[in-house]
Length: 337
Image (cartoon, rainbow, N blue to C red):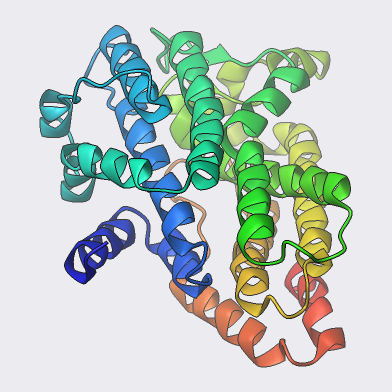
C-alpha cells in the first residue's frame, strides 16, 4: 500500500477510535494492517447498524450486502452514499464513503489473512443483525430486553468474544507460530477477554441504551429479584438494583482477569502485543472501579476513565514491563485503587 494511502487509513482509524488507535499503533507491523482493516470494516458495519434515522429494514439490507462483499459472494460495488449523508460524525461519514477502499484492501491480503478477517466479520455482522431484529421498534416507552444470561453470553461472543479469537489466530500465525502454547486454552481465554471488554461497555452504557429502548441486562433473572427493565430508567432505584448489577460487574472483572492470564501466557518477547492487550484490560478494570462507586443508572454523566488516567496506565505498563513481578502486579494495583 502506498505511504499516502496508509497515512490516510491511519488518520481514519484515529478519528473513528482514538482509544483503539493507541492499541493499534503499538502492535508489530506484521499484524497491524490486518487488525486495523478488520477494525475499520467492523466499525463500518457498526455504523450502518447504528444509523437510527434509517429504517431497520434498510440497515439490515445494507449489512447483508456488505457482508456478501466481505465474503466475496457479491461483486457489485456498494452505494452507501445515502447512509453516509445521515452521519453526524464526519469520520463515520468518511468511513462509509471509503468502504470500497477497505474492501479492495481486503482482496489484497494473503488467503489466510483474508479468511481470518472474513470469519470474524461474519460473526460480528450476525450479532449486529440479531440486535437490529431484536430491538426493532424499541423505545424508552417500549423497552425490549434480552431474556436470559445465555442470550447475553451469545451476544457478547458475537460482537467481541470472536474478536479475541481472531486476534489470537492472527498473532499466532504471524508473530509466534512456533511457540509452545496450549492453543485451546489460549483461544478460550481470548474469548473471555473479548466478552469482558464488551460487558464493561454494556454496563457503562446502560442508561444510554435504556433510553434507546435496549436493555442488555436479562429480564428473567431481573424478574427473579422482583425488578422490571423499566425500573432501570429511574436513577432512584440504584440501591435496589445494585446487587443484581454487581453480578455482571463481577463477571466482567473475572473475564478481564482471565484476559490478564491470557496476556501473560503470550511469549514474553512479544512486548508490543502484551502491551496492546494490557491497556484495554487495565482501562476496563479502572472503568469497573468507577461503576462500583457511582450511580450507574444516572444518565446525566457518562462513566468514563479520564484521559489522564489512561495516560498514566499506559506509562506505567511501559515502565514496569522489564520487571516481571511488578508488571504482573499491575492488575492488582488497578483493582485496589
